[in-house]
Amino acid sequence: MKEFKYVITDEIGIHARPAGLLAKEAKAFTSNITIEANGKNADITRLMAVMGLGIKKGSEIVVKAEGEDEDAAIKKIKEFFEANL
Image 1 (cartoon, rainbow, N blue to C red):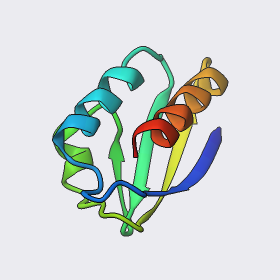
Image 2 (spheres, rainbow, N blue to C red):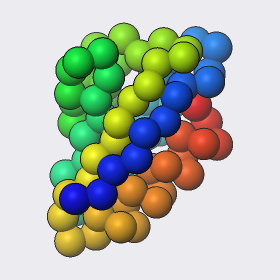
Image 3 (cartoon, rainbow, N blue to C red):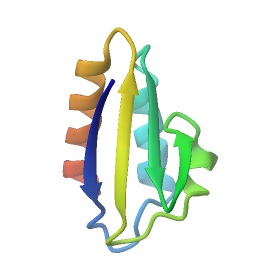
Image 4 (cartoon, rainbow, N blue to C red):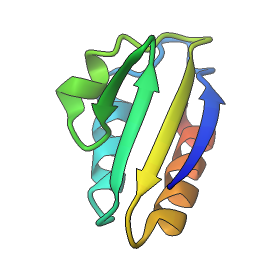
């Protein structure tokens, strides 16, 4: 399993547009990718579950990937966060 921590810098936090793009990015991988924030977890490919975490600016999240392509998945998702959130 691979993971990284990230602090959200987007003024609005994770909202519909980036959550949708994030889910699309994650669906390209076979690994199970989850996001943890505020003591709750969600499958990163499930848009409403991610939005339901209520992740705001300044929130620290932990993203975990587990599976055969976990290295590539965690790299790509981390790059997405750095570029968009």
